[in-house]
Image (cartoon, rainbow, N blue to C red; front, side, top):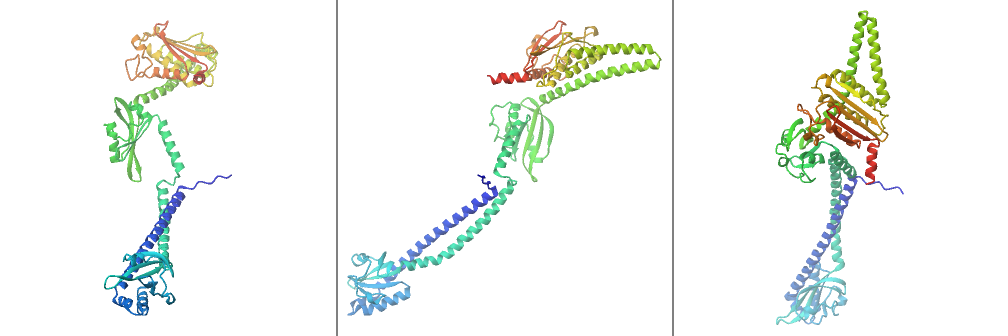
Length: 543
């Protein structure tokens, strides 16, 4: 079965609007018809009763009852009244209901039909009744005729046949139909205009598309690591993402929406953005004691400002990203040191050749080649992963520049890293720890500057040891060493390197141990299971 194509929003609005207006117009038309019919019927009944009462009070009618031949006098009077008033019939009967006058002459002298004369002949009442007479169903006005002594001597019956009343009703049906038809046409036109305008206001999007956009928008806002706060034109908060709650240190997920931005952040400049329409990019700000970098942008609809959005991120997080970038810079710096060292070597050889000191040049080349080849062969043999081997060689050259004795433990051994382990994490770990070790001994005498690196792949895990000959880590700092802004240095904005090491080790499902090393300084021991994140995923799936 081929599924039916869903109607567009414009088609549905048009169809429902036209149908609704049509039903309302028809209901109103039918209601108006029945209301009018009842009104006309009521007016005809009152008219028939009025004619009957007026006729009953006429002196010539009373005289006709007292004459020797009442029919001869009353029949012309009844016909005259019928023709003048447009009634279907005017019947005059005596106190026994015998007709004295009737539109059909043959029925004069016979008893009146309908059985509705008792109230007039017995009780003396004037009233309106519906009954079936000799001419058919009719609406009739009945009035008693009294003599001078007040006795009931007859009855006047004025009637309008139901079929004639229906004919009168149908005279108005065409007019009502035209009115209903015009209302339906106007409703259809209005529905069409309304449907087009609504579709235009919704940017020609269908409800499913709008729902998808709303879902995607919420997912996008929640996925952004920057805090996001949106306000309307009055400065009332309409949207807050999870990162904003975290940055503001506010619990809960629905407490801010609906509040004024100044109530939540008294120092916010979003009201100024709403007023001026000016963008604020990369502006520093302090929120609840936290330093953040804020961007503020107005939200426009045409030329009108309908709101504003503010995005912000903790300055500490930006600083941490800077530290991560610095790791790459350090790696580059290590390679640059190697290049610089060989440039010096080449300059020296060039100078010796120009001085024609060929034996000294050849000796220097053999000596440097043997040393370099020995280093390359050792690193290549011990560290089979070229990525880590490259940074270790770079640090050897960097250590030369810093006059640091950099030792790669002779027991080091590493196969190529598994593909599922992120190599940049290892570079970041070694880069941070070795750089910190260099900095820890930079103030020591040259002969006491030593840093040892040990890397071992035992088949199940990868071990790193970085040890320096510095003063070590104070006990009071040890417990909080891997927290943000904690550093063993007293200068600059420091304290991000070790937290990055901790994060990378955690991402690799490893562990960190800090001890006092044999060289007298700090000893960092890193253990990374070769299963890495795969092992962690397996463990979590079994819990």
